[in-house]
Length: 168
Image (tube, rainbow, N blue to C red; front, side):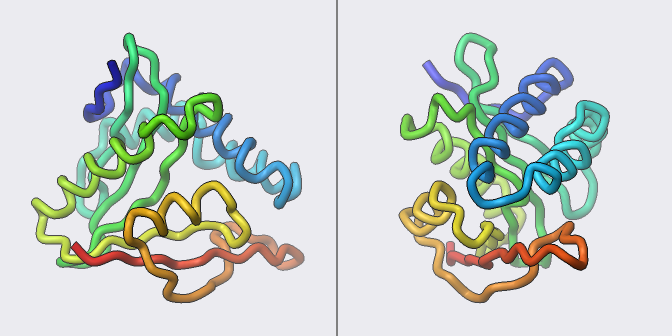
């Protein structure tokens, strides 16, 4: 049985693993290895995740994990970006567990938290060409709004993100 809960310190290694594995699997055909490893090093290292698991302040709703027998299958993090707008900052799964509803369980958990804080809409950025993430979000009611330069680009890189939004 898969359960979803707010992450604790015992989930840090699992969050790091699913985000790292999920990021590599998602972008290995569309992004340079240097870019992928730079993003993983910055965002999915255990020390950063530890700080984010502990921190629960303005604009950050925390990490949530999907667990099966205490093994982290997926993780999501997000926060409020305005008084009535939530955002999914990160959502990754164990690549071998896609298509089992784990992502939906995680998105639903974060969405309920954001709705309870007054969110009327929810935003997410998905890399242009992400053929795993885009269909997932579109199937859950997110609509394309615009393209923008991806976060973390170096001047010579031209990775783009697609901004999506859905109404609650």
